[in-house]
Image 1 (spheres, rainbow, N blue to C red):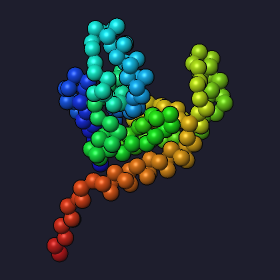
Image 2 (cartoon, rainbow, N blue to C red):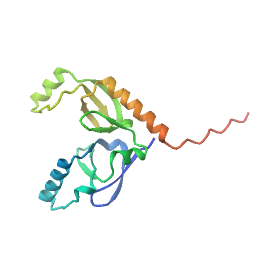
Image 3 (tube, one colour):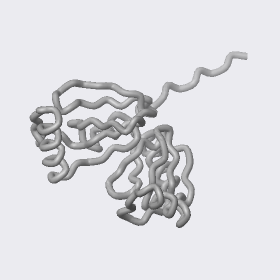
Image 4 (cartoon, rainbow, N blue to C red):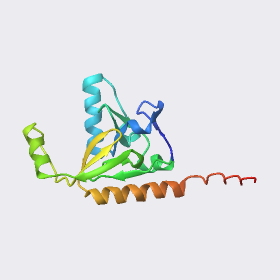
Length: 166
């Protein structure tokens, strides 16, 4: 299992970050790419080629970076990803727990003036913070187990243990 995520920024810079600092990875639709391009142009006077970005990686501190790699390229690095719903992926190794998202939880968020745009069924605890999911807690944990198993199967075989000498 890998402990780092390698990605290429929209500028072409290669970066390596600790996997446990990754909160969410989200594939970008054409509309999202266009919005990101307009936002970067307006706020930072940066022009990007939308054909060269595939995902947005959000970190623990809620900052985000656009990356050229797609989900398959990230998985090829040995990063097991779990879809929490709405095309939001989390590194499986970062998931520490999942519990039911209750009506009381929703009411508390609404009191804090959050708008919930979908039905959430689980609060997923990760090394990078809590994330809401439309999947049930059991589905989240099943997806986690399946993703970890798939990444272990795809990983290079480990060296055989040396026999003990008596």
